[in-house]
Image (cartoon, rainbow, N blue to C red):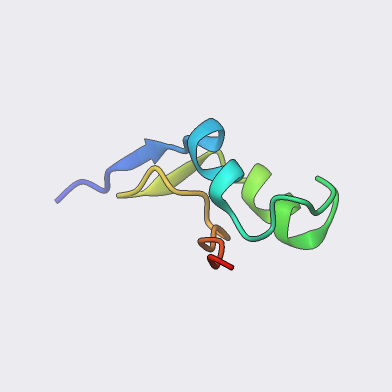
Length: 53
């Protein structure tokens, strides 16, 4: 079976991420930006959904 890597949709997921306000060079964001593809998913590797307040 072949692994299926998908392009990460930063434009869709970054604005809904709880780390959105962090600078791009922060470890969490840096990890995502260094991985433009993800196995079986369009989500960034460190993406966490924002909590509704």
